[in-house]
Image 1 (cartoon, rainbow, N blue to C red):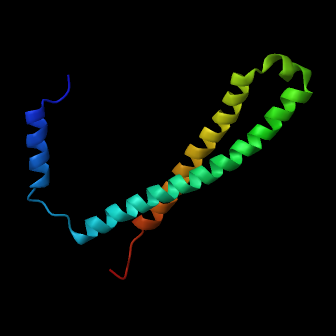
Image 2: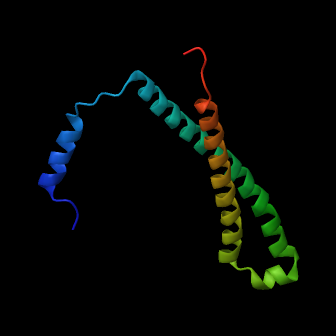
Image 3: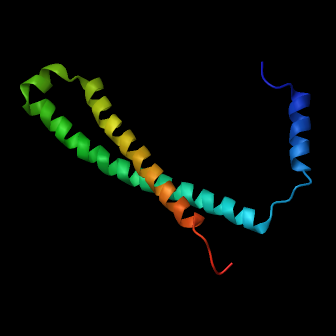
Length: 112
């Protein structure tokens, strides 16, 4: 299965020897989009690490103090609660940051 090697090599050679050359404006837009993505990932990781601590502390305390939680929340459930919160915060924060950066870059530049 997959792409035969001779087709893959032909496609890669064609892509490298393309007659189209990106303009400086397109190169700048590509660099800005990469920067926005990196900024979003960075902000998402920061927010997810804070959310991890913010959900882990109450979950672990509840498992030791509350009788219902002690009886019903095993290690898998605890990990799921903590990781679900962290994952949700990561994606929400990264998405908001990337969209904010893209909106900032899409504004009309009068000096150009």
